[in-house]
Structure formats: structure tokens, C-alpha cells
Amino acid sequence: MAEPQRHTFETPGHVALRVEIPAGSLTVETWSEPRVEVVVVPGRDDDRSLRAAEATSVTASARAGRHEVGVRAPKREGRLSIGLGRGPELAVTVRCPEGSDVDHTTHSADLEARGTLGALTVASASGDSRVEDVKSLALTTASGDLTAGAVTGSLTVKSASGDVDVRSVGGTGTVNTVSGDVRLGQTGAGVKVNSVSGDVELEAAGGSVAVGSVSGDVEVAALPGLVLWIDAQSVSGDMRSELEVGDEPAGGAEVPVDLRVRTVSGDVRLSRSRAVAR
Image 1 (cartoon, one colour):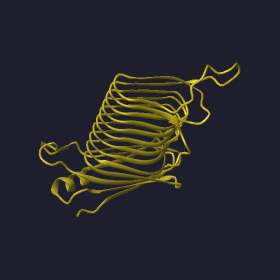
Image 2: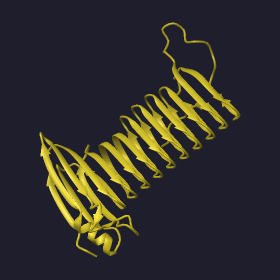
Image 3: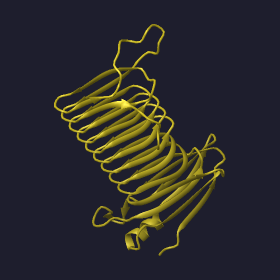
Image 4: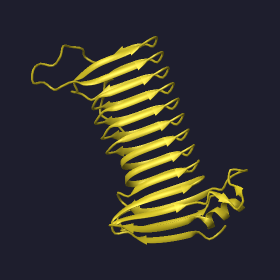
């Protein structure tokens, strides 16, 4: 096994990390120190991975108090595309200050982030992402799964078949998927979810909801006390609601928020949420 690449950068300010690797794994851990540490090793003990690890560039630059750290694997090996045969795998480990922004581009590398990040952007074909707390999260993937803790700001997900599981979303949330299942915990602002065949579960909706599905089942539990304007329809799926139905709120009462659900054959269940357990 080749010696690992090790790099340390002093970063007394905001940090933006950009990682571009084809496959393998990216592990990001935040800490309170004003520096970034990067370690790059081969993800497999083969010639392609060894050469890719040696050729991976790790750079740092500073602009007006903003520190940019880049980790970029080579896109081609000599005269041969890495897409011919089994491509290289890298294992990249980064320690960075809390609140750092991370931009991760990959074909199939998995991401694991521990601690609190700033803005997280992920573009992958099949790599899974497991993250703890982030300020905002934007994910584009074909089949990678997403598991996240608290997203204090906005959540944007575009996926074909990857599952989405997020504990809480403080800002607006938009999720578009074909066959992946979607589960969101407590939401504080508007949420829009569109799915073809994936199931959708909103455990504790605290704002407006708009869900569209063809054959996936939909479950929405609204926070206690939230006044709702309900518009739910299904062509052939079963409809079940445990929500109270009444007239418009009296003068001075809370303005209702929209709860809109549309399915073709998926079942729909509406209810009040209990205490959020996750």
C-alpha cells in the first residue's frame, strides 16, 4: 500500500471544500480548530487506485478571508480513460472547521459527514450520503441514498431511485424522485415532494405541504395546532384522514396553511403528528 498523501492548511476564516473523486469514499469530520487536514489513500490495493491516489491534487487558496481547499482526482490515466475496465477508488478523509461548505462531485463514492457543515452540495451517480447537521443541502443523484440529520435551511433533492431520509428541515424543502422513498421528520416551512412510485412520509409537517405521486403511498402528519386547508385527492387509492374538519378559522385566528396531496393509485393517510422521536 502506498504512503498516504497528507496535507495541512491553516484556515482562519470561512472554508469552502471541493472534492472530485470517481469512486471510493469521502469522510468529512468537523472540529473547532482553524485548519484543514486532508488525507488521500487508495481505496483498493491495485495499480489504478495507487496511481490515482499519487496523482490526486490537493490545493488551497485564500480570497478575502475565504479559504478554498480542493481535492481533485485525475480524470484520465495516461492515454486510457479510467472508464475502461474497473476504475480507481480513493479514500479521502478531511477534518475541517465547523460550518465549512462542502461541494462533492463523484460517480460512486460514498460520503459520510460528522459534525456541523455549512452548505453541502452533492452530485453523484450512485454514491450514498450520510450526514449529520448542515445549514443547507442540495443533492443530485441517480441512485444514491441520502440520510441526514438536521437541515437548518433549505433542502433540495433530485433523485431517480435513491431513498431520502432527513430528520428535520428548517427551511423550504423540495424533493423530486422517480422510485425512491422519501421520509422527512419535522419541517418548519413549505415542503414540495413529487414521486412516481416511491412512498412519501412527512412525520411532522409544520408548514405548507404539496405532494404529488402516481403509485406511491403518501402519509402526512401535521403538527398539533397547525390550522390546515386540506385538498387531497386520489384516483383509485384509498383515502384516510384523522384530521378534524371544520369551517374557516374565526376572525383573528391563525391563517391556515395548504396541505395538498395528489395521487393516481397510491393510498393517502392524513393525521396529527405525535412527539418527534427521531
